[in-house]
Image (cartoon, rainbow, N blue to C red; front, side, top):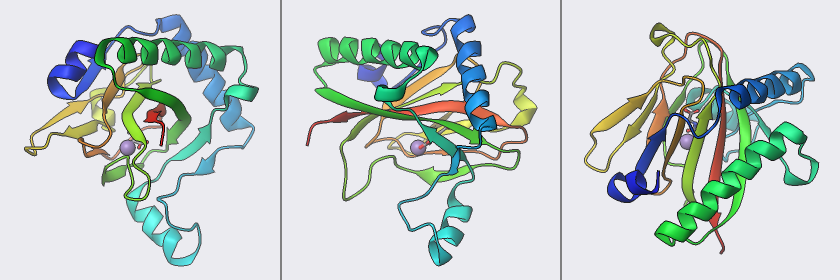
Length: 195
Ligand code: OGA
Ligand code: MN
């Protein structure tokens, strides 16, 4: 992953997480979603009036942030593996990654996320974006691909198939989620630098 990141500013990995663990993470997400604590994801605008209309045109997912302090055993394993990855990237590429933040994300059928960058003008602490997909029975006709753009506007597409882990430099790669024709589950997170 470090080699791919250094060469291309992004990486795709298929077996950092075991199939067994992926299915347990997926079950954890579904359990939490059934409790009704997912919230509609925003866009940095307020959640009312015009802000809500803008949000509806930009993204259609629901999210649930994970918190270290109250993580259950499965979430602890997930966050622990991500901590290992952070330490490896820091050791090999000297990226100075410190904090991590991440959330489960559920896109309904018809969901999408328009082309965007993951760092904001007022807060550019995000260095690396990570997405881990949790869809064991994904078919390519379900759509929902992640399209990652390069600076020269070429792109690569990634199917959100269970176990695929994607990472890219948050400041360099605009990306979008193409319209999904099935429920689409994942875990999205960011390694940040100290500000
Ligand atoms: C995001 C995002 C992509 C995906 O949450 O910022 O771009 O494939 N997610 O879910
Ligand atoms: Mn994004």
